[in-house]
Length: 114
Length: 114
Image 1 (cartoon, rainbow over the protein chains, first blue to last red):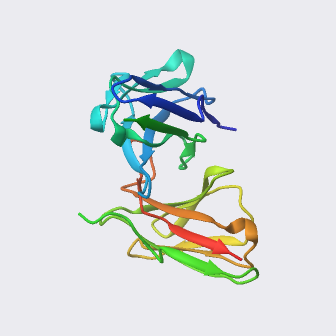
Image 2: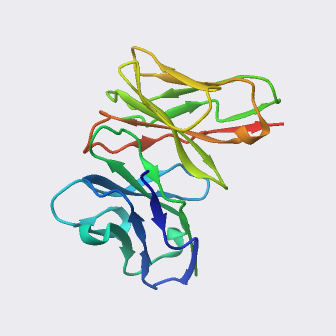
Image 3: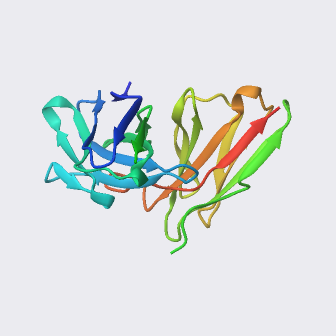
């Protein structure tokens, strides 16, 4: 069965620090990849997505992610975080075949200290 | 364009009762998916509807059911509620259920079963 692993449960860092959140998935075929963010009290929002093409994708709010097919990974990065980046981050994978569901990782809570 | 809306936002029910949650997708979106979010299990896929047909179903008991109407609005029903059904129920819509279509999430319905 498809699974999605996020390496860190909780990350705490200071403003201006760099952020990298790991995501690995287990399916060997073609996938669509997503990162969603859930700010406190708000609904899930799409940060960025990868369907095909350039494996380095840029999203909103200065986030980017790199798809490394050989490592089944889709890590999220931001060079310099702000206090407003405090949120929960979810990696999600959709198998491009006959499956229509998104499989989510467990999520990583990011706390940015001012 | 209005986002995904879900009603009601909060609901308190007693064990054994049933509940119906409603979701209105973004205008023009024909696919609606439902997810259950809990602190212990994270985000888990319930089912997906496209053009009034259920296309995929997650690993939930038959007490969880849904339907989609011709205007793409969707409802999910949970019968014989159990304490463990307490969760945030999220609805997501997309243009289609195939690849290269991201899902947009609503704010969720917070269900508490007492």
